[in-house]
Image (cartoon, rainbow, N blue to C red; front, side):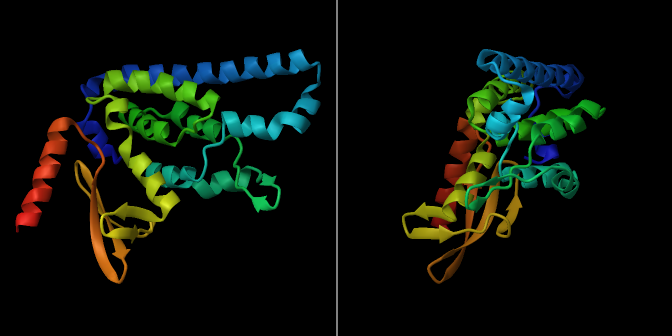
Length: 238
């Protein structure tokens, strides 16, 4: 979600300084929890730190810190230099498939955020950060804690909007488009975005031999959904 749209959705922009501190503290507790869990893991197995890194290090980093392909889009959205990150972090490889695990990307993100003095910007970053967290047990706990705070700050609960733009982007990317009554519409998530308004985002796509435009409602309440349906009916009437 773009910053201006996010700020319009806040219950009270004056609360950003308070919640910025709470978001930072939530991350610090996450890192403390990771450190304690790692030490307990090592102690329970009676292994050294080096043995831990050799046997479990890669999976551990993926579960706790890896964010996936959406990380590039997130860095670009925030205006941060992803190339600098990828140049400084090692690449991990899994079997015959090359997997771009940029380790410790969550720490890199929060290195930015812990230094951020623009509290509105920090809260906006956290809102978008929630959408790219993985569904690992470890990251789901962090996501839940950040969501709870965001729901106190934002006009609509995170669960209500379901962070729909992130969900939509992932769906389009995974399926190379969307299915509809008329068939499969091919959409290139990186190159086919036409524009975005307060509630919707529009992509161009290809349906068989025809070029089409598809509008999605991404941030909704029941009232906005009703308005979106009315727009659809009016377009058909025209």
